Length: 186
Image 1: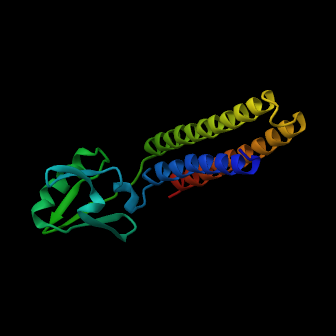
Image 2: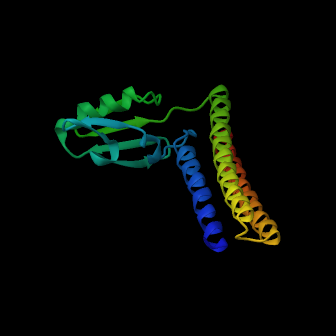
Image 3: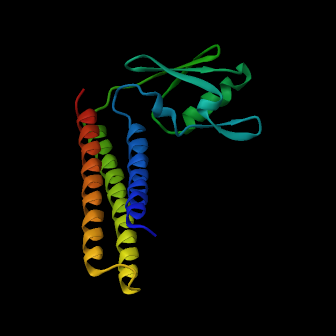
């Protein structure tokens, strides 16, 4: 087990937590249309549950409008039902194989709720990053106990792990700040 490999592995795991946060934040509605808004929607199609993007194309023709072009006309009703049951606060309007979704204006109360949700996602990401740090520190503690690394190496590696952790927490805070501004400004 080389120390360089451990640090890179820890970075990779921490970046995984960051990637999950980005995905969760992209699903939060900000009053502007985003194709990612429909990512959590699953359609009962062909005897199984499939993500919406496997049965239709989602596009954003206008800032407050989503357009869902269903590939198989027989699936239009199932897609409409899936969007409605996803509880996204969207009202599907169907025209042939195209489903239009108007994004309503967000009121102040709803914006504050979304900011709270964003903070919850960010805190979960921070906790995940700290768990990875703890795992890394446990490994180097064990290596020192087994006399595979010196106390100086232990200190140096601990310091490196803390630097990586601090950077990742900073990245989480930056993502949260950007999303918060996006939610609160129109």
